[in-house]
Amino acid sequence: MSVSVIGAGLAGCEAAWQLANRGIPVRLYEMKPQKYSPAHHYSGFAELVCSNSLKAMRIESAAGMLKEEMRRLGSLITECAAETAVSAGGALAVDREKFSDQVTARITAHPMIEVVPGEVTEIPDGEVIVATGPLTSDGLSAAIKRLIGGDYLSFYDAAAPIVSFESIDQSRVFFAARYDRGEADYINCPMNREEYEAFHAALVSAEAVELKQFEQMSVYEGCMPVEVLAKRGADAIRYGPLKPVGLRDPNTGRRPWAVVQLRRENAEGSLYNLVGFQTNLKFPEQKRVFSMIPGLENAEFVRYGVMHRNTFIDSPRLLDAAYRLKREPRIRFAGQITGVEGYIESAASGILAGYNLANQLQGRAPLILPRETMLGALTAYISDPTVTQFQPMGCNMGILPPLEARIRDKAARYRALAERGLDALDALLREQSQCNGIGIT
Image (cartoon, rainbow, N blue to C red):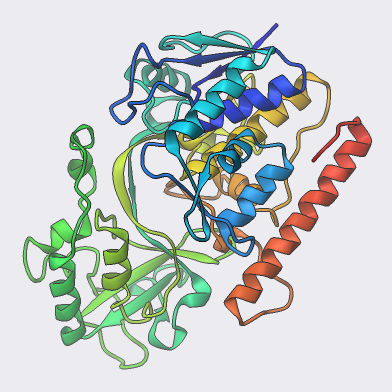
């Protein structure tokens, strides 16, 4: 009996490839070329619609580390990317059409993969991997909504920026909750009147991303971008996300003119998000303007704010670490619909979903990657039930467990994190190979 994989994007192709290479028949459903999403135009599989770059190649970068993990797990996408690469400095960039053609050719030529054209509007029987991406069709979205419940499916990615805790200037901020209610869970960045007015002026004049027509739906109804709110008046955000009520700066003994609050993003406290800062500003503008916030002058932004059409599920409530739906384990999800953000992150999740389904069908234990690996940390993040107000996340060094010994030099620290993670992955794969007799490259 064959496995159904829905969607021939990066995640779906990786999942199908893992299964097929383990001798498991796959029916790969793809609605192109009969039907296209609003963002897709090319008939081939694994279409890159936003950029021809698959991010940095350096092992000491989060993206480079993740791609090396993917390669060691037998990735189709990284192999095809290497074969169609174009010059891009330290990044992996590809000729988009040649890349898509190469992936398509490899998938369609595989004797264990049957490509089934046409839109899927109901989830098939049997073992299924849903890898339909951030622009899942309305028909299938309705089926997913019936399966998991409407409260667990989002159609817009309205996320605030996230910074690493270690990059915050502790001398300029203070920990407190409003009116001292509960634990001092928030980092507060106090502003005087002069700082606030300069920040407000920069915010209202910053350049925003132009939304595509299909994204201009209910984005602004449910979650106002901070720059749009700021344009309503000089004090609009000071009575909104920057309100200082119930807070007293211990450095001055007085209530600040305005306060930006940061809330813990993960259990380790290594990441903090800017509360109420959903934004549609261009990334360089976010860096420029938000670095004006006291304490964030040298902040490392591990994720910038975004507001765009993005279908994703509430994975921490729904999925386990093998990408299985807890309430119906025959169904797995992979790719950006799970809340991983980015091309390589999407592809990597497809590898793990396919690998673990193959393990299950062949009577083997699931491959749960160590938290020290980038894919393991990303998988842990999207399946962690303690994560609140879930928003998509891309690979970044901030989601990795810290090193035992502190390394001040950032490049050296990142290289040490990468080497630790890759060593942990190799050790696990050797163990699996010895137990199962599977060859790993």
